Image 1 (cartoon, rainbow, N blue to C red):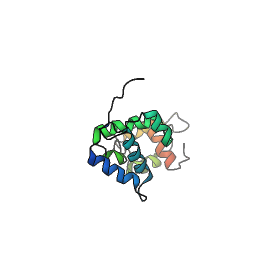
Image 2: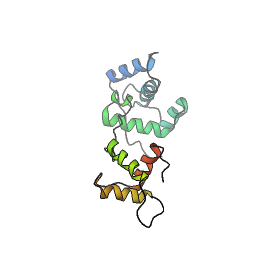
Image 3: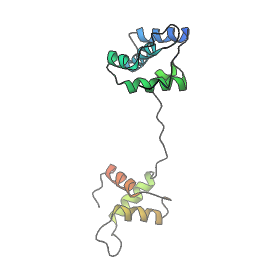
Image 4: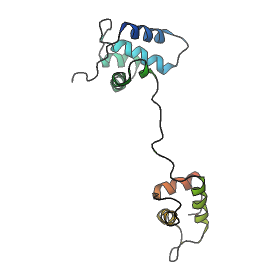
Length: 153
């Protein structure tokens, strides 16, 4: 088995804070579990330095979860690692309300000459032609139409 990549060594102050969190009754269950796991992974002078497999068995979690927690402790510190990671939207929405309205209006129009009905790709191309968006994927068009419950195409 490979050596641990991330080693957790807690100071006495950090251990005291984690012990307090782990022993509280009114605390988020996930936060309490993380504190308990960190106390057992501590390889400092006062820590038990248990192996991940035994900790995983005690708490009924996968050992990868413990590895990820140790990595997070090395990145942000033990107290900050107790908090959930914040989610940030990767990018801005492609179609705003105005763009969605144009898309719905397009589906109500007659399809291009030679076509029996609109396809997602045709709709995406038309939105770009009309300069409503600079670029849009046909999958995005499909998701927007599904969200709007459009049965037009």
